[in-house]
Length: 300
Image (tube, rainbow, N blue to C red; front, side, top):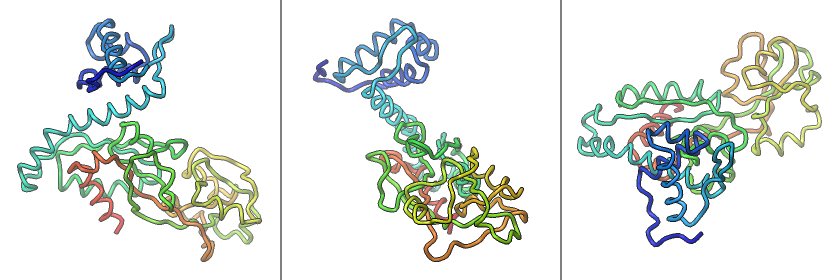
């Protein structure tokens, strides 16, 4: 399919692409948008002709994005976010920062569980005090597969709190990131246990990323995990009940009570970096810049 000379898509066409992808079909998208199915189908065909690519696989069960369609939908979401932010950004610029109420609208944030519990709240409190018109929407996303950074790449979040690789690798291409905190891992065990390294290992799927794998492989005292839990909070509860030991990062340990003992793993202990991830166009908005500033202030 060859692209036409004018490949620009109008906002209406972008909204239709997003609706088809999110509802899984032309009829459902039409219902969401208040259009006819034929209007949605015609728009999608027109978008495909402009872009020179098939964007959706059609079938009896509905429509699913092709790889080209997934990329188109992700970019469509990000472009539409700029349309949504346009008025608020201009008003804020006109006010020169003097009018706290000039900046308004939703700010979409994706974060993994412990970051949503411990890093975000103080930053959001300060943000609300400074810009009461910003309405944060926080989604907890597991750090598996594309993780929280994938929400930004897909256009579903304006900013993510993510675990970062020390060398900057692992992010979807084109995104921006910055380190907010480095946290050390510690040995976690039932309080007062005489030999915690002899206990079974408890773990959860999000725990061991590239930042700990090399260290983990070098430790001959660490057994294979006996129990895999849903998240770090569950692991911490099980450790407190005497069911095993775990190796956990500092953010996860902020919920530890007196039933849990925490032992330093020494100077060679693994650390992980936790930071923000955003798209270049979002990084230029006042709302995202303000949240990054408050995240940096909150952890200081």
